[in-house]
Length: 305
Image 1 (cartoon, rainbow, N blue to C red):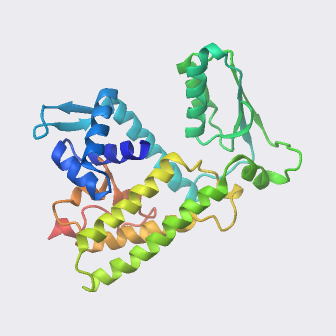
Image 2: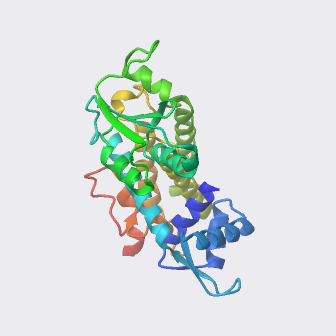
Image 3: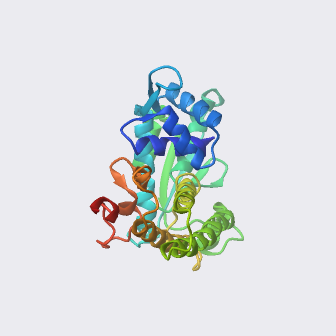
C-alpha cells in the first residue's frame, strides 16, 4: 500500500495537476490496475496527501495536498542524505546517539508513532525500547518528543562505545541491529536489473530495439523501485560501518549511468517527458547525477530540438 501511495504521489507531484484518466494511464505503466489507482487516490485525497477537484471519472483532477507536500519534503531530504553518504559527504564521527523511552500503555498510539518515526529516521533497535543511530539526530528526536507530548518519558544519550556480549566492534554491532543481508539483497537485485536494462538501452541506441517506450518505462519502474528502497528500507548507515563491498555504492554508479543513457535516447517523447522529473522542482537529471557533473542538466537534448 505504501509503495502504491508513494508512486501516485510522485506522479502527481511531477505535474501542477493531473486528471484522473491520465493518472490511471501512467500508473498502469508501472503495473498498477485502474481500480487500485482510483481507490488509492481517493484515500489519499481524504487524508490530505492529495487534493481532489471535480466529480465523475472524466472531470476529476488531483494536486499535491498539504500532507503530501510534507511527505515530499521527507522524500527529498532522504534522497539527498543517500547521495551525501554514498559520495562521502557524511562520515561517522565515532559517536552513537541512543534513545530510550518508557511510555505508558494508555499512550500506546503515541508510543507506536514514536517507534515508527525513529525507524523512519534510520534508528535501529538495540534492545527493548532502546534505539541507536550513528548520527547526531538529537534535535530531531526532541522535536518529535515535543510534538507528540512525550516529555518526561524519553531520554537520549551520546556515547562513544556500546558494549554487547558476544559482539566485537562497531561493524559487528551494526549487523546485529540492522538487517543488512536483506537490504544488500534488495540492492543487488536492483543492480542486476539495471545492468540488464543498460544493455537493452545501448541496443536501442544502435536501432536494434524498436520499442523505446517499453524501455523507458522499464527504466522508470527501476527508478521507482530504487526510490522505495531509499525511502522505506535504507537506514543510511555511514560507509565506515558497512561491509567493504556494500552494493548500494554500485547502485549509485549504475543509476548515474542509466540516467545518462535515458537522457541521450529519445525514449519518452513529449507525452511522458515530465516523468523525467523526480518531483516538481527536482529533476531526475539533477538528483541522479554525480556532483560536479555539469553534463547532466535539464533541459535535455529533446528540449533543444
